[in-house]
Length: 140
Image (cartoon, rainbow, N blue to C red; front, top):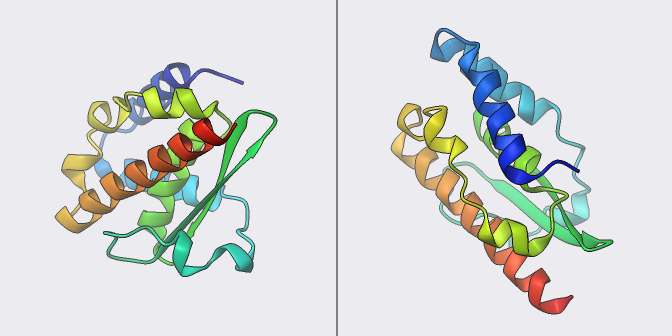
């Protein structure tokens, strides 16, 4: 498994290949399309990310000391954002997730190209993933 910063650097490089934000949005949407289908049982209120304009479900479970996240959203951009976050954090050790500095968000210009409500949702998704990682780090 690649380290979080290695994955972030690859994402920064990938996004730098696009000249405009239309291409970057399409690339972002592809992250959403790459998500594994989330089982309906996980689409429960307890897994909803608070602070998101559209509904986003996020669930994590520990498998062999790694925290695996599952997510889904009804909105394609939001699903892309959560897919992008999963590509960086899912499959990592809980402590590494808690300690991660997600610098790629600023480097690719994601936050500044999102509407204020989507940018708040992005922050909420990151917080939920880090809180989940904290809980899993203390349980294992």
